[in-house]
Amino acid sequence: MRVSVRQENLAKGLSIVSRAVENRPTLPVLANILLATEDARLKLAAMDMGLGMSITCWIGAKVDQPGEITLPKGTLTDLVNNLSPDRVDMTLDQTTLTMNVRCGATVSNIKGIDASEFPLIPEGDRPHVYIDGRILKEMINQTVFAAAKEDNRPILTGVYTEFHDNVVTMAAADGYRLAVRTATVNEHFDPSVSLVIPARALAEVSRIISEEDDEVGITLPGDRDIVLFHLKNTTLSSQLLEGKFPDFSAIIPRSYSTNTVVYTSDLLRACKRAEIFARDSAGSAQLMVKPPNAPGEPGEVVIAGRSNERGDNTGMVDASVEGESLDISFNIKYLIDVLNVIPDERVVLQSNGATNPGVIRPENRDDFIHVIMPMSKPN
Image (cartoon, rainbow, N blue to C red):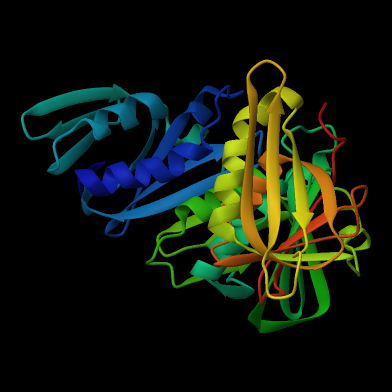
C-alpha cells in the first residue's frame, strides 16, 4: 500500500470517523481506524460494536499501490493533527504491518493490525428517501437533546422516526420532556415505516452534515435492523433500538388556558441567569406569566431562580399574553435546551395551569412542538 493525501483532508476525515471508535473495545482492532484504497480515494472507517454504529469517510488520494491496514486511532489522529499542512505520503510494510508516514521533514512509523481482522462495515442498498441536509440537521438538533441519557428504559435513548405519506416525524422523550419535529419529503410512504434510531448516532449525523450536503440519503431497514445515512463523502450506519416507543401524541395538550408570545433571545437570557441560582434546587425555577393590566399594555413573564446558600435572580421580559395568569415551575435547563434550538425570533409558551405540562413552539410554525412537565415549586 502506497498512497498520498493532503494533511488537511486526512485530518478532517479522521475527525469524522474517530467518533465511532469504542472507548473500551472488546477486540483490539476496534480501537483502530481502517485505511483502505478505493480507486483514487482513501477510505477511512471505524466501528463501535457496543453502539452498533459505523462511520465511513472517503477522501481524495493519489494511489500508487492499493492495500489496506488498521492503525490505532489515538496515535494516528494525534500525529496527523500535528503535521504541517502539506502532502502526507504513507507506505505500508505488509510483512511488519507498519505504516511509514512522511510529511515534510517528519518521518513516523505506526504499527497496525491486519485489516482482515476488522469487522465488515454494513453496506446498504440505494437510499429510499432523500432529505434536505439543512432540514435534517435542524430536525435532529431539535429532538435529539430530549432523548434519555440513562438506559433505564433503552427505547427512550433513541429518537422515534416515522415516514408516513410524504411526512417524516422525529420524536424524543426522556419522561420529563418531549420534542416532536415534522417535515415533508418527496417520497410517499404507504404503508408507513417507523423505527427508533439511537440518539448518539443521529447526533453524529447532524455533526457530519455540512453545507456541501444538499441532500442526505437514508436507506431504511431491510433484512437487518440497521439504518444508513449517505452524505456526500461519508456514510453512517446504525443498529436500531428494539421495543415500542411510547404513544407521545397522548401527552400533547389540545387546549390551553394561557397563551404567551415572547422574544426567544430575551427569554433565553433570562433563563440562563435564573439557572445560575436554580442549580441548588435541582434546576427548579419559577415562571410567572402575567396578563396586561390594561388594554394596549404588554403582559410580562417573570423567571426566578433561587438558592438558599447563594442568593437569587429574578428577570422580567415583555410578552403578549392571552388568557389566565400562570405560576409554574420548570427544570430551567430544559427550557434553555429547547430555546437554544429554536432559531425563530419569537416563541409561544402555552399551559393549562401549574400542574399541567408546558408547551413551547416557534411562533407561526406547526412543525415543532416541545412539551415540558412541571416541577414542584422550589422552597
